[in-house]
Length: 339
Image (cartoon, rainbow, N blue to C red; front, side, top):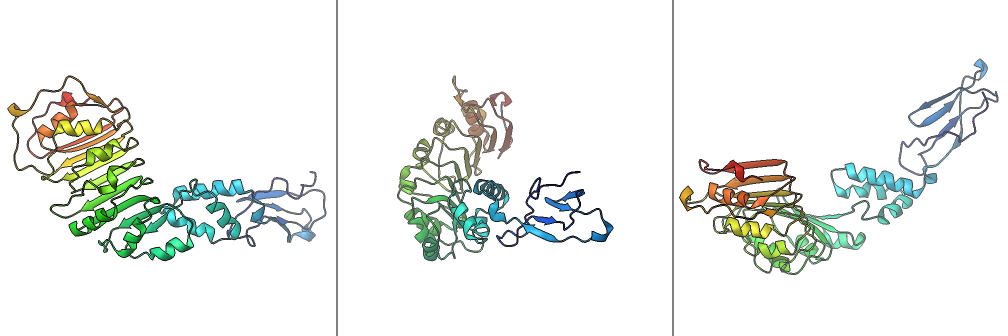
């Protein structure tokens, strides 16, 4: 067997992600021509045949800085796709200056985000980090729109997601007051209110959200929603949960709202129990034409028979895979309406 070149076939073994300690070890001090090899977890060990030289030692190192930047970027992207929080990029940038440079050079590829909660020191956050997209989250024990949140909302051209869970009606009004203008980079809006008469004004978001992809409203009346939806052609997921009784929406009008959402994949419409039920004789006959939703795959509906029957009668979804329907009263429903 001919001698192995010193770097031939060697794979980097990355243990501690730093420039000084991440190395590939080449182990031998034997001068014999034949060297059996063993590869274990990315490290190549070279052994001597002579019993007199059974020990081996480290004679060379290849630092992790020799790995090309494009390879490291692939590793970082793989890591970021599998972590639960997009703020984990902080772990990468604290390894070394080179890693920090690679991470900040690819903010979109790595989906870098800044996160703001009720207690986040927003002024400090904006000073020390690059101008990355901002995610606002208000949930848990804190249900208030604090000064930190309001300060973050002033960066309306960087807000990409707003998630409010279980906020009272008064706090929802504070949020709506701070979100009067346009938010051009907003892609996700999720608001859950536990107020009895929660609603958002016509001026909310300036009536436009051109890049919105996910919208979830729970127990919130939004009379000008049709205007917002018409400005959001890329919407993929729409969930209107626990629609208040004060927000009167006919099924025909609702389907008209949805007709422009040709990229919609997930739809959830859940009405609160109605104070009055409509009998079968008062229902209108099915329409002659249907609205086509070409990529809609999942539908969840909850309400009285009349609303749901009319909605389904006007919808056609050729790629529909799953339908879940819950009726508030004993249903009188024609299953043939589902198409």
